[in-house]
Length: 178
Image 1 (spheres, helix red, strand yellow):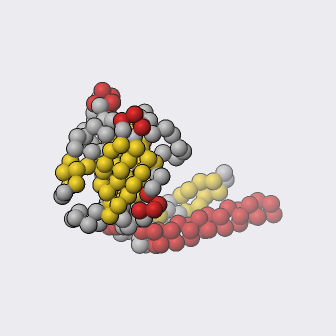
Image 2 (cartoon, one colour):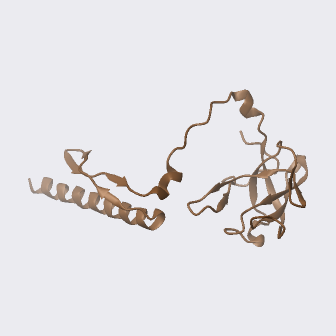
Image 3 (tube, helix red, strand yellow):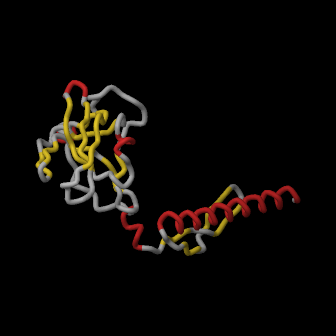
Protein backbone atom coordinates (compact mmCIF):
# COMPACT_ATOMS: atom_id res chain seq x y z
CA UNK A 1 0.00 0.00 0.00
CA UNK A 2 2.78 2.43 0.91
CA UNK A 3 4.55 1.64 -2.37
CA UNK A 4 1.37 2.46 -4.35
CA UNK A 5 0.99 5.77 -2.50
CA UNK A 6 4.59 6.73 -3.34
CA UNK A 7 4.06 5.81 -7.01
CA UNK A 8 0.85 7.85 -7.02
CA UNK A 9 2.69 10.88 -5.57
CA UNK A 10 5.50 10.43 -8.10
CA UNK A 11 3.05 10.35 -11.01
CA UNK A 12 1.19 13.41 -9.66
CA UNK A 13 4.46 15.25 -9.14
CA UNK A 14 5.65 14.41 -12.67
CA UNK A 15 2.34 15.50 -14.22
CA UNK A 16 2.48 18.78 -12.30
CA UNK A 17 6.03 19.45 -13.52
CA UNK A 18 5.02 18.72 -17.11
CA UNK A 19 2.07 21.10 -16.85
CA UNK A 20 4.20 23.81 -15.28
CA UNK A 21 6.81 23.47 -18.06
CA UNK A 22 4.06 23.55 -20.69
CA UNK A 23 2.66 26.74 -19.15
CA UNK A 24 6.09 28.38 -19.03
CA UNK A 25 6.91 27.26 -22.58
CA UNK A 26 3.69 28.64 -24.01
CA UNK A 27 4.06 31.95 -22.19
CA UNK A 28 7.69 32.38 -23.18
CA UNK A 29 7.60 31.15 -26.78
CA UNK A 30 4.15 32.13 -27.97
CA UNK A 31 2.86 34.63 -25.44
CA UNK A 32 -0.14 32.42 -24.69
CA UNK A 33 -1.98 31.51 -21.54
CA UNK A 34 -2.93 28.00 -20.48
CA UNK A 35 -6.33 27.06 -19.11
CA UNK A 36 -6.30 23.84 -17.15
CA UNK A 37 -9.37 21.77 -17.85
CA UNK A 38 -10.56 18.57 -16.30
CA UNK A 39 -9.77 16.01 -18.97
CA UNK A 40 -8.57 12.56 -17.91
CA UNK A 41 -5.10 11.37 -18.86
CA UNK A 42 -4.51 7.76 -17.89
CA UNK A 43 -1.18 6.42 -16.71
CA UNK A 44 -1.09 2.74 -15.64
CA UNK A 45 -3.63 2.66 -12.84
CA UNK A 46 -3.60 6.42 -12.20
CA UNK A 47 -5.83 9.12 -13.66
CA UNK A 48 -4.52 12.63 -13.98
CA UNK A 49 -6.87 15.42 -14.82
CA UNK A 50 -5.34 17.89 -17.10
CA UNK A 51 -5.44 19.31 -20.56
CA UNK A 52 -4.20 22.49 -22.02
CA UNK A 53 -6.19 24.91 -24.05
CA UNK A 54 -4.15 27.58 -25.78
CA UNK A 55 -5.95 30.89 -25.85
CA UNK A 56 -4.11 33.32 -28.08
CA UNK A 57 -4.48 34.20 -31.74
CA UNK A 58 -0.67 34.39 -32.11
CA UNK A 59 -0.68 30.61 -32.44
CA UNK A 60 -2.69 30.71 -35.67
CA UNK A 61 0.51 30.19 -37.66
CA UNK A 62 1.06 26.86 -35.87
CA UNK A 63 -2.43 25.60 -36.61
CA UNK A 64 -2.73 23.49 -39.73
CA UNK A 65 -3.77 25.71 -42.58
CA UNK A 66 -6.27 24.60 -45.16
CA UNK A 67 -4.67 21.73 -47.05
CA UNK A 68 -3.66 22.45 -50.59
CA UNK A 69 -5.20 20.48 -53.40
CA UNK A 70 -3.40 17.16 -53.83
CA UNK A 71 -0.83 16.92 -56.59
CA UNK A 72 0.35 13.83 -58.39
CA UNK A 73 3.74 12.23 -57.82
CA UNK A 74 4.62 13.25 -61.38
CA UNK A 75 3.86 16.90 -60.54
CA UNK A 76 6.02 16.71 -57.41
CA UNK A 77 8.90 15.24 -59.40
CA UNK A 78 8.79 18.30 -61.67
CA UNK A 79 9.96 20.50 -58.79
CA UNK A 80 13.75 20.41 -58.81
CA UNK A 81 15.02 21.03 -55.27
CA UNK A 82 18.80 20.84 -54.93
CA UNK A 83 21.44 21.48 -52.29
CA UNK A 84 23.95 24.25 -52.84
CA UNK A 85 26.68 25.91 -50.82
CA UNK A 86 26.61 29.69 -50.40
CA UNK A 87 29.91 31.07 -51.70
CA UNK A 88 29.18 34.76 -51.30
CA UNK A 89 26.67 36.93 -49.43
CA UNK A 90 26.53 40.67 -49.97
CA UNK A 91 24.12 43.38 -48.88
CA UNK A 92 21.21 44.15 -51.20
CA UNK A 93 20.31 47.77 -50.31
CA UNK A 94 18.03 48.19 -53.36
CA UNK A 95 15.63 45.46 -52.12
CA UNK A 96 12.28 46.58 -50.68
CA UNK A 97 12.84 44.42 -47.58
CA UNK A 98 16.30 43.85 -46.06
CA UNK A 99 18.00 41.06 -48.02
CA UNK A 100 21.30 39.61 -49.16
CA UNK A 101 22.47 38.81 -52.67
CA UNK A 102 23.75 35.23 -52.67
CA UNK A 103 26.07 33.32 -54.99
CA UNK A 104 25.44 29.57 -54.63
CA UNK A 105 27.45 26.58 -55.90
CA UNK A 106 24.98 23.94 -57.11
CA UNK A 107 27.61 21.45 -58.26
CA UNK A 108 26.83 20.13 -61.75
CA UNK A 109 24.20 22.87 -62.24
CA UNK A 110 26.86 25.54 -61.85
CA UNK A 111 27.07 28.76 -59.88
CA UNK A 112 23.69 30.51 -59.47
CA UNK A 113 22.53 33.82 -58.01
CA UNK A 114 19.68 34.36 -55.58
CA UNK A 115 18.34 36.86 -53.09
CA UNK A 116 17.23 35.99 -49.57
CA UNK A 117 15.46 38.01 -46.88
CA UNK A 118 17.41 36.45 -44.03
CA UNK A 119 19.21 39.48 -42.57
CA UNK A 120 17.52 39.21 -39.16
CA UNK A 121 18.84 35.73 -38.34
CA UNK A 122 22.07 35.45 -40.35
CA UNK A 123 25.12 37.61 -40.96
CA UNK A 124 26.94 37.55 -44.28
CA UNK A 125 29.80 35.69 -42.61
CA UNK A 126 27.47 33.03 -41.18
CA UNK A 127 25.99 32.39 -44.61
CA UNK A 128 29.28 31.72 -46.38
CA UNK A 129 29.87 27.97 -46.58
CA UNK A 130 26.32 27.10 -45.44
CA UNK A 131 24.40 24.53 -47.46
CA UNK A 132 20.82 25.44 -48.39
CA UNK A 133 17.93 23.90 -50.32
CA UNK A 134 17.13 25.69 -53.59
CA UNK A 135 14.34 25.32 -56.13
CA UNK A 136 16.28 25.41 -59.39
CA UNK A 137 13.61 25.19 -62.09
CA UNK A 138 11.39 28.20 -61.45
CA UNK A 139 13.16 30.33 -64.01
CA UNK A 140 14.77 33.71 -63.46
CA UNK A 141 13.07 36.42 -61.41
CA UNK A 142 13.86 40.10 -61.53
CA UNK A 143 14.15 41.55 -58.02
CA UNK A 144 14.81 45.25 -58.45
CA UNK A 145 18.09 45.55 -60.33
CA UNK A 146 19.07 41.95 -59.48
CA UNK A 147 18.16 38.73 -61.32
CA UNK A 148 17.58 35.71 -59.08
CA UNK A 149 18.19 32.33 -60.77
CA UNK A 150 17.11 29.99 -57.95
CA UNK A 151 14.75 30.20 -54.98
CA UNK A 152 16.46 29.65 -51.62
CA UNK A 153 13.92 27.93 -49.36
CA UNK A 154 13.13 28.57 -45.72
CA UNK A 155 10.44 28.71 -43.07
CA UNK A 156 8.92 31.67 -41.29
CA UNK A 157 9.45 31.61 -37.52
CA UNK A 158 6.99 33.00 -34.94
CA UNK A 159 8.36 36.53 -35.46
CA UNK A 160 8.18 36.40 -39.26
CA UNK A 161 11.92 35.90 -39.79
CA UNK A 162 13.08 33.38 -42.40
CA UNK A 163 14.95 30.30 -41.15
CA UNK A 164 16.85 28.64 -43.99
CA UNK A 165 15.99 25.07 -45.03
CA UNK A 166 19.18 23.02 -44.88
CA UNK A 167 20.26 19.38 -44.97
CA UNK A 168 21.02 17.87 -41.55
CA UNK A 169 24.45 16.74 -42.76
CA UNK A 170 26.76 17.85 -45.58
CA UNK A 171 25.90 16.37 -48.95
CA UNK A 172 27.42 16.92 -52.40
CA UNK A 173 26.40 20.21 -54.04
CA UNK A 174 23.66 19.62 -56.59
CA UNK A 175 22.14 16.67 -54.70
CA UNK A 176 18.42 16.42 -55.45
CA UNK A 177 15.78 16.30 -52.72
CA UNK A 178 14.18 12.88 -52.91
